[in-house]
Image (cartoon, rainbow, N blue to C red):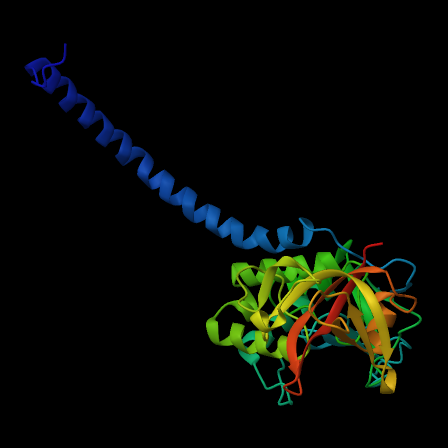
Length: 329
């Protein structure tokens, strides 16, 4: 039985063990420190590759492929570059200017969106690095080739990796859905949420996070993350939801269409069945959104999942401003 008293033999054994442990520590401590430092250094090299390799790429299907091999290129910023397509040694803007889809990196020059070289220069550097690879190609949607300024809209692929997606994954850009809608929406949204939660790039400090969340809110979308105060994680039942509880927050609801009301300039109110709202729960949508989302043929009785901000229209009517919809029939 153990009495709690320490015998001399035990004391000597402990002392010898302690001395041995000290020798082991002196031997392994430098190795451990070196290993940690080396591991950190290696991680700095490997992480960019992992960010490109460890994700689903969501590359476009059935789009036109344009090789950039042996073309003279000039990077403008993190989401824009010039390509000498006609090989005359000069860049013609906008005919030879490429604007990457689904991204919007921080501006390097003064604009209505502000100027942010601290976050914009790393994005530009990343794009310049990937474009230095020899097998870069563009994917262009023949139905949506050019943007508002006549620039070529494209997804950039390098060595099988979607660079537009990588810009979002690394926090160089938010997921931009203003002008086009990717088939792999979920992949892009998850990449944005991952960068947001890891506080990478534009999400790395509080002031920047707040600024970009507000910008996204103005555009009708938000980051799909439980760490985002605007995002309501739980999917609600359209028949019983009280939108007044979610004022200014991004909600997701599921419900059946009660009726559809056409408005001016392609706008449309989609009413979902609701137990307390006589007309139904109103969802405001616009023509370009419905085209991107494949909602042109929706009808009464269809089951939808609606995603968007809860808003009070003219201080009278609660409604959802549509960002995304999925047909669940």
